[in-house]
Amino acid sequence: MNNILKRTGGVAIIIVAALVLLASVGGVVGLWAVNSQVHDVANAVFAPVESGLDTADKALDKVDTRLDNARTRISNAQEVVGQLGQNSVGNGPVLAAISDTIATRFGQEIDAARDSVDNAMELINGVNSAIISLNRLPFVELPTLTDRLQSVQTRISSLRDRVQELRTDIEATIQGKLQMTGARINGLLGNMDSGLQDVQSSVKEYTTTVQEAQTRIATQKSNVASGIDTIWIILTIFLLWIAFSQVVTLLYGWSLMKSKPADVTVVPAAPTAGGDLTANPA
Image (tube, rainbow, N blue to C red; front, side, top):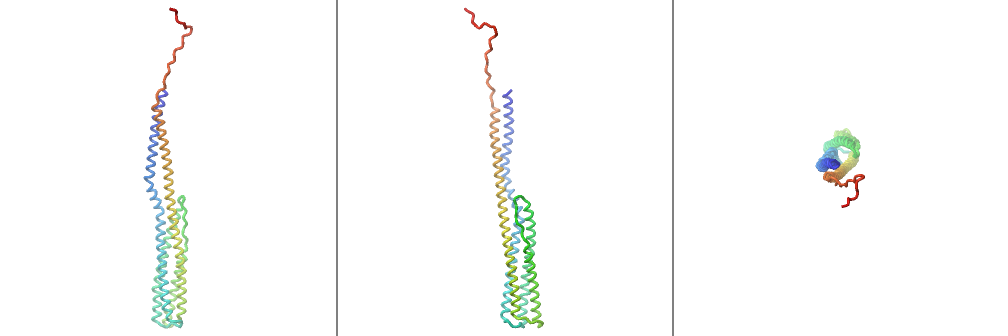
């Protein structure tokens, strides 16, 4: 009876161990089958922030280019005014050319720079929203971007107003309603160039901030990818350990199933009480 129970138990152990072994091996295969998909999901989570920062960086680069062009227009106008000397300016055609350079070409560059800043601000607001959402995830901690671009936007608008004021003064001078010297015009142009330089410095600083954020995102993304692989390796080792333990259990169950019945030893019958213990004489 004991032997039957052992064999029955061995069979049960083998069945259970085989099922657990198959599940463990299947778990290992399944883990690494979906590993790339998990990485794809992680990349998709970071994609909106990466795309937004990349687009914002390009928008800021356009702002810098527009500001460079605007400063070139200022420099061209200063060269023209410098040829007029320090006396009152009364040359209508020359003043008209200066007015066209400042009001039209320079103004266009300023307007384009302001539009690029507006676009960059919209992108950065969207990026900040995405960063806030990402920071809700475990082990993710990214800095949000500041609103310093708003001051840049204000200063660009102020420069646009100063351009319009200068154009109005030049037109009044052409009409003889106002007298302006070349030195005064150059001084106003110099102030505009200084303002443009300050704005350009702020834009470049903010561009550096955006690029640092891009680096942080790339680092965080790499850390998440490494974390996923580390978790996968730990789970794989755990499942393999379970699989190995089931192999040992299978061998134990097999030994129970193949166990032989215990040998039965025949014990001689005890002599009957009172019986003759000696042989009868012949």
